[in-house]
Amino acid sequence: MRLHIIRRVLLPVALLTCSMTSGAQTPLGGVGILGDSSSDEFRADDNRGGAYAATTLNWAELLVNHRSVDLGSWGVRSEPRRAGYAYNWARSGATAAEVVSGGQAAGLAAQITAGNVSTVILMVGANDFASWNDTYTGVYDGSVSGASLTAKITGIVESVRLAVDTVQRAGAAKIFVATLIDRGTTPAFLAAYPDPLKRQRVKDAIVAVNAELRQMATPNDIQVVDLFSYGTTLLPLIDASGYLNIGGEKISAVAPGDEPHHLVLGDNEHGGTVASGLIANYFIGALAAAGITIAPFTDQEILANAGIAPPRPDTAAPSITLIAPSTTAIGPSSTAAGAGTVCSVSVGEAAPSEPSNETKVVVQHAPVSRSRRMFIPITGVPSASCALT
Image (tube, rainbow, N blue to C red; front, side, top):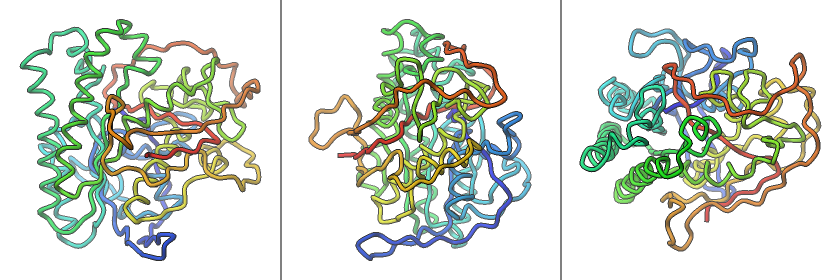
């Protein structure tokens, strides 16, 4: 999956036990991650963020640095690991099949057996519908269709199923599987793939994958994190000028840049630290539904973590508060009761603040990068209360 995410600062991490407001307690324990560049540390080999690297972090690094979530010790390991946290097996460029063939699932399973990991997050699939490797293009232009498209969908789901089976057989662990996001609604993909009917082909395939992931999860005690609905619900909340208002700061959702007032990094592939803070809050909400409570990031924390200063006093609720997220993610096409994501959002109208030490941002559709990196568009908005109903 192509996720633009950030890295970490070398900090010790502690085993975290979180309590529900009801008084019951569920240990989070060590957290293992399977996936692609959306979760592969920004502060490791990929070294994202350019001049702003020090404050360019992904959702996982933010949870380690600012919520003491335990991803294991930081270190440099031999292939296929590279540098990063011991329990984070995500690798930039990985497809669903490579989570298994590349050793991610087997490696994490050994850590579960050893008693080091008790929570697993699997987020993959963006590189199965990507621009850089033409996996999006093939479905878009129809060269992958009919039986070959059915085989593609089945292969993605079976790879996820095999990864889940591998870690489940290793021992007791709470498992979270994220649905795939449709990147065809992002400015970069709209520019590169302008035909709406052809984009719909890709969306239909992604919806089919997600439907099968939900079917797989239901009888197997797997928690499904509905990132598909998250993205499709929040993308329309970008204002007419292409900005999101986060804690009074205008964050460009259409112009890429490493400077933190941009939702997407300059590689036009990965979400910056602000976007990562919003996706971290979404996972925090999913964990809460499973009895694991971590304090969500407030608007001002999201900005401060991204290096946007000075931080203002902040007593308001987080930008995105997820109340009892559903563990069976329902796609937007469903008419089932209780499906979808409902958000109440306030979007600021003030003119955007000029990022310091940077020329005025020109809002434009940027071309999709074909570099070997991974991306999942992360969108959010301040002063929003979201409940998965």
